[in-house]
Image (cartoon, rainbow, N blue to C red):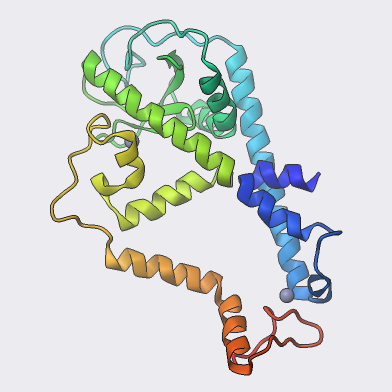
Length: 275
Ligand SMILES: [Zn+2]
Ligand SMILES: [Zn+2]
Protein backbone atom coordinates (compact mmCIF):
# COMPACT_ATOMS: atom_id res chain seq x y z
CA UNK A 1 0.00 0.00 0.00
CA UNK A 2 2.76 2.48 0.96
CA UNK A 3 4.80 1.41 -2.03
CA UNK A 4 1.91 2.43 -4.29
CA UNK A 5 1.54 5.76 -2.50
CA UNK A 6 5.30 6.32 -2.70
CA UNK A 7 5.41 5.62 -6.42
CA UNK A 8 2.31 7.68 -7.23
CA UNK A 9 3.52 10.56 -5.11
CA UNK A 10 7.19 10.66 -5.97
CA UNK A 11 7.93 8.18 -8.73
CA UNK A 12 10.99 6.00 -8.25
CA UNK A 13 12.49 8.55 -5.84
CA UNK A 14 9.30 8.41 -3.79
CA UNK A 15 9.54 4.64 -3.70
CA UNK A 16 13.14 4.79 -2.51
CA UNK A 17 12.19 7.34 0.17
CA UNK A 18 9.19 5.42 1.44
CA UNK A 19 10.51 1.83 1.29
CA UNK A 20 13.18 2.04 4.03
CA UNK A 21 10.57 3.62 6.29
CA UNK A 22 8.19 0.70 6.12
CA UNK A 23 7.64 -0.79 9.53
CA UNK A 24 9.40 -4.08 8.88
CA UNK A 25 12.38 -2.42 7.20
CA UNK A 26 12.74 0.58 9.47
CA UNK A 27 15.99 0.53 11.41
CA UNK A 28 15.70 0.47 15.18
CA UNK A 29 17.40 3.86 15.53
CA UNK A 30 14.51 5.48 13.71
CA UNK A 31 12.01 3.98 16.13
CA UNK A 32 14.08 5.27 19.04
CA UNK A 33 14.44 8.82 17.70
CA UNK A 34 11.37 11.02 18.00
CA UNK A 35 12.70 13.51 15.45
CA UNK A 36 13.06 10.70 12.91
CA UNK A 37 9.52 9.61 13.73
CA UNK A 38 8.20 13.10 13.10
CA UNK A 39 10.16 13.39 9.87
CA UNK A 40 8.86 10.02 8.83
CA UNK A 41 5.25 11.08 9.44
CA UNK A 42 5.76 14.35 7.54
CA UNK A 43 7.22 12.52 4.57
CA UNK A 44 4.33 10.07 4.47
CA UNK A 45 1.79 12.92 4.66
CA UNK A 46 3.57 14.70 1.79
CA UNK A 47 3.56 11.48 -0.24
CA UNK A 48 -0.15 10.95 0.40
CA UNK A 49 -0.91 14.51 -0.73
CA UNK A 50 1.24 14.19 -3.87
CA UNK A 51 -0.24 10.78 -4.64
CA UNK A 52 -3.77 12.18 -4.22
CA UNK A 53 -2.90 15.02 -6.56
CA UNK A 54 -1.54 12.55 -9.12
CA UNK A 55 -4.59 10.32 -8.92
CA UNK A 56 -6.89 13.33 -9.24
CA UNK A 57 -4.95 14.51 -12.28
CA UNK A 58 -5.05 11.04 -13.78
CA UNK A 59 -8.81 10.88 -13.27
CA UNK A 60 -9.34 14.28 -14.84
CA UNK A 61 -7.22 13.30 -17.82
CA UNK A 62 -9.02 10.00 -18.23
CA UNK A 63 -12.45 11.64 -18.14
CA UNK A 64 -11.33 14.28 -20.63
CA UNK A 65 -9.91 11.61 -22.95
CA UNK A 66 -13.27 9.87 -22.87
CA UNK A 67 -14.97 12.83 -24.53
CA UNK A 68 -13.66 13.33 -28.02
CA UNK A 69 -12.04 16.71 -28.42
CA UNK A 70 -12.55 18.66 -31.60
CA UNK A 71 -9.46 18.76 -33.80
CA UNK A 72 -7.75 22.12 -33.83
CA UNK A 73 -8.48 23.46 -37.28
CA UNK A 74 -8.43 26.71 -39.24
CA UNK A 75 -5.31 28.68 -39.76
CA UNK A 76 -5.15 31.84 -37.76
CA UNK A 77 -3.51 31.80 -34.39
CA UNK A 78 -2.95 29.78 -31.29
CA UNK A 79 -4.87 32.25 -29.21
CA UNK A 80 -8.18 31.77 -30.95
CA UNK A 81 -8.09 28.05 -30.62
CA UNK A 82 -6.97 27.55 -34.15
CA UNK A 83 -4.28 25.61 -35.78
CA UNK A 84 -0.84 25.08 -34.36
CA UNK A 85 -0.03 21.86 -36.10
CA UNK A 86 -1.34 20.15 -39.21
CA UNK A 87 -5.06 19.86 -38.67
CA UNK A 88 -5.06 16.17 -39.41
CA UNK A 89 -7.40 14.11 -37.33
CA UNK A 90 -5.24 12.24 -34.83
CA UNK A 91 -4.59 8.65 -35.74
CA UNK A 92 -4.48 5.88 -33.21
CA UNK A 93 -1.37 6.40 -31.14
CA UNK A 94 1.61 4.08 -31.20
CA UNK A 95 2.52 2.06 -28.12
CA UNK A 96 5.16 4.65 -27.28
CA UNK A 97 2.69 7.50 -27.35
CA UNK A 98 0.20 5.49 -25.29
CA UNK A 99 2.83 4.84 -22.63
CA UNK A 100 3.76 8.49 -22.72
CA UNK A 101 0.11 9.49 -22.33
CA UNK A 102 -0.31 7.28 -19.29
CA UNK A 103 2.91 8.49 -17.65
CA UNK A 104 2.03 12.13 -18.15
CA UNK A 105 -1.69 11.75 -17.42
CA UNK A 106 -1.54 13.04 -13.81
CA UNK A 107 0.12 16.29 -14.74
CA UNK A 108 -1.93 16.61 -17.94
CA UNK A 109 -5.08 16.32 -15.86
CA UNK A 110 -3.94 19.05 -13.47
CA UNK A 111 -3.14 21.29 -16.44
CA UNK A 112 -6.62 20.63 -17.79
CA UNK A 113 -8.13 21.55 -14.44
CA UNK A 114 -6.19 24.81 -14.55
CA UNK A 115 -7.33 25.42 -18.13
CA UNK A 116 -10.89 24.72 -17.07
CA UNK A 117 -10.71 27.55 -14.56
CA UNK A 118 -8.69 30.05 -16.55
CA UNK A 119 -9.06 28.90 -20.09
CA UNK A 120 -11.15 29.28 -23.17
CA UNK A 121 -11.52 25.86 -24.64
CA UNK A 122 -9.61 22.79 -25.65
CA UNK A 123 -8.79 21.05 -28.88
CA UNK A 124 -6.59 18.21 -30.00
CA UNK A 125 -3.80 18.35 -32.55
CA UNK A 126 -1.00 16.37 -34.08
CA UNK A 127 0.17 12.83 -34.04
CA UNK A 128 0.72 11.67 -31.39
CA UNK A 129 -2.02 14.02 -30.25
CA UNK A 130 -1.46 16.74 -27.75
CA UNK A 131 -4.18 18.81 -26.19
CA UNK A 132 -4.17 22.54 -26.68
CA UNK A 133 -5.64 24.63 -23.92
CA UNK A 134 -6.03 28.34 -24.31
CA UNK A 135 -5.21 30.42 -21.31
CA UNK A 136 -4.08 34.02 -21.13
CA UNK A 137 -0.32 34.10 -20.56
CA UNK A 138 2.52 36.48 -21.08
CA UNK A 139 2.60 37.79 -24.62
CA UNK A 140 6.16 37.01 -25.63
CA UNK A 141 5.94 33.31 -24.76
CA UNK A 142 4.26 30.92 -27.20
CA UNK A 143 3.11 28.66 -24.38
CA UNK A 144 4.10 25.98 -21.93
CA UNK A 145 3.86 22.26 -22.22
CA UNK A 146 2.43 20.74 -19.05
CA UNK A 147 2.32 17.00 -19.53
CA UNK A 148 0.55 16.51 -22.85
CA UNK A 149 -1.34 19.76 -22.55
CA UNK A 150 0.00 22.83 -24.28
CA UNK A 151 -1.14 25.90 -22.38
CA UNK A 152 -0.90 28.44 -25.12
CA UNK A 153 -1.19 32.15 -25.09
CA UNK A 154 -2.10 34.78 -27.61
CA UNK A 155 0.62 34.97 -30.22
CA UNK A 156 0.85 36.45 -33.66
CA UNK A 157 0.02 34.28 -36.64
CA UNK A 158 2.36 31.40 -37.11
CA UNK A 159 2.81 29.63 -40.39
CA UNK A 160 2.36 25.86 -40.82
CA UNK A 161 6.10 25.18 -41.03
CA UNK A 162 6.77 26.99 -37.76
CA UNK A 163 3.76 25.27 -36.25
CA UNK A 164 5.05 21.83 -37.17
CA UNK A 165 8.48 22.68 -35.74
CA UNK A 166 6.91 23.96 -32.53
CA UNK A 167 4.87 20.77 -32.30
CA UNK A 168 8.05 18.67 -32.56
CA UNK A 169 9.70 20.77 -29.90
CA UNK A 170 6.74 20.51 -27.52
CA UNK A 171 6.54 16.78 -28.14
CA UNK A 172 10.08 16.47 -26.80
CA UNK A 173 8.89 18.27 -23.67
CA UNK A 174 6.17 15.62 -23.30
CA UNK A 175 8.94 12.99 -23.34
CA UNK A 176 10.74 14.95 -20.64
CA UNK A 177 7.57 15.08 -18.56
CA UNK A 178 7.10 11.32 -18.95
CA UNK A 179 10.67 10.52 -17.88
CA UNK A 180 10.72 12.99 -14.98
CA UNK A 181 7.29 11.92 -13.70
CA UNK A 182 8.48 8.32 -13.61
CA UNK A 183 11.68 9.18 -11.80
CA UNK A 184 10.40 11.73 -9.30
CA UNK A 185 6.65 12.22 -9.63
CA UNK A 186 4.77 15.24 -10.87
CA UNK A 187 6.99 17.73 -9.08
CA UNK A 188 10.38 16.74 -10.49
CA UNK A 189 10.30 18.41 -13.89
CA UNK A 190 9.18 21.83 -12.62
CA UNK A 191 11.89 21.78 -9.94
CA UNK A 192 14.60 20.51 -12.30
CA UNK A 193 13.57 23.05 -14.93
CA UNK A 194 13.62 25.86 -12.38
CA UNK A 195 17.07 24.92 -11.11
CA UNK A 196 18.42 24.52 -14.65
CA UNK A 197 16.99 27.79 -15.88
CA UNK A 198 18.42 29.78 -12.98
CA UNK A 199 21.88 28.30 -13.53
CA UNK A 200 21.65 28.22 -17.33
CA UNK A 201 19.31 30.99 -18.46
CA UNK A 202 17.40 31.27 -21.73
CA UNK A 203 18.83 29.35 -24.65
CA UNK A 204 21.34 27.58 -22.39
CA UNK A 205 18.57 25.71 -20.58
CA UNK A 206 19.21 22.00 -21.08
CA UNK A 207 15.55 21.05 -21.36
CA UNK A 208 15.07 23.54 -24.18
CA UNK A 209 18.32 22.50 -25.84
CA UNK A 210 17.31 18.86 -25.87
CA UNK A 211 13.87 19.80 -27.22
CA UNK A 212 15.50 21.82 -30.01
CA UNK A 213 16.23 25.53 -29.63
CA UNK A 214 15.45 26.50 -33.18
CA UNK A 215 12.15 24.61 -33.30
CA UNK A 216 11.11 26.11 -29.98
CA UNK A 217 11.76 29.65 -31.20
CA UNK A 218 14.86 30.14 -29.04
CA UNK A 219 17.90 32.09 -30.16
CA UNK A 220 21.18 30.17 -30.45
CA UNK A 221 23.10 30.09 -27.14
CA UNK A 222 25.28 33.16 -26.61
CA UNK A 223 29.06 33.24 -26.95
CA UNK A 224 30.61 33.32 -24.46
CA UNK A 225 28.00 31.38 -22.51
CA UNK A 226 26.29 33.10 -19.56
CA UNK A 227 25.93 29.94 -17.46
CA UNK A 228 26.70 28.50 -15.09
CA UNK A 229 25.81 31.67 -13.21
CA UNK A 230 27.85 31.83 -9.97
CA UNK A 231 25.07 33.31 -7.84
CA UNK A 232 22.65 30.59 -8.92
CA UNK A 233 25.17 27.83 -8.21
CA UNK A 234 25.90 29.40 -4.79
CA UNK A 235 22.18 29.62 -4.07
CA UNK A 236 21.43 25.98 -4.90
CA UNK A 237 24.51 24.76 -3.03
CA UNK A 238 23.25 26.74 -0.02
CA UNK A 239 19.84 25.10 -0.36
CA UNK A 240 21.45 21.64 -0.41
CA UNK A 241 23.61 22.53 2.63
CA UNK A 242 20.57 23.71 4.58
CA UNK A 243 18.63 20.57 3.72
CA UNK A 244 21.59 18.32 4.52
CA UNK A 245 22.91 20.21 7.56
CA UNK A 246 22.17 17.45 10.05
CA UNK A 247 23.91 14.84 7.97
CA UNK A 248 26.89 17.16 7.52
CA UNK A 249 27.00 17.67 11.29
CA UNK A 250 26.91 13.92 11.76
CA UNK A 251 29.71 13.42 9.22
CA UNK A 252 31.88 16.10 10.85
CA UNK A 253 31.35 14.66 14.32
CA UNK A 254 32.12 11.15 13.11
CA UNK A 255 35.34 12.40 11.49
CA UNK A 256 36.38 14.25 14.64
CA UNK A 257 35.62 11.41 17.07
CA UNK A 258 36.46 8.69 14.55
CA UNK A 259 33.36 6.71 15.43
CA UNK A 260 29.66 7.29 15.06
CA UNK A 261 28.00 8.63 18.17
CA UNK A 262 24.51 9.37 19.25
CA UNK A 263 22.58 10.55 22.23
CA UNK A 264 20.61 7.76 23.97
CA UNK A 265 17.21 8.89 22.70
CA UNK A 266 18.37 10.17 19.31
CA UNK A 267 19.76 8.71 16.11
CA UNK A 268 23.26 9.86 15.06
CA UNK A 269 21.84 12.29 12.48
CA UNK A 270 19.62 14.03 15.03
CA UNK A 271 22.16 14.10 17.85
CA UNK A 272 23.17 17.74 18.48
CA UNK A 273 26.78 18.92 18.64
CA UNK A 274 29.46 19.24 15.98
CA UNK A 275 32.34 17.67 17.88
ZN1 LIG B 1 16.68 10.82 14.09
ZN1 LIG C 1 10.47 24.46 -25.02
